[in-house]
Length: 59
Image (cartoon, rainbow, N blue to C red; front, side):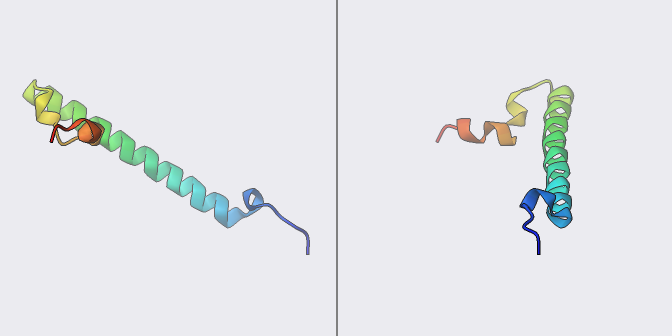
C-alpha cells in the first residue's frame, strides 16, 4: 500500500475546504453586522458586542 500524505486525502481536502468556506462566511457575517449596525445607528459604540472588540473591552 503506497504511503499518501494527508494533503492527498480527498476526504481531508473536502473537510478542510468546507471549514475554510465556513470560516470565511463567519467573518463576512461579522463584518456585515458591524457595518449594518454602524450605518443604522451612526454610532461605533453600538457595535460594542462585535468579536473584534472582545480583546479591547475594559473591565
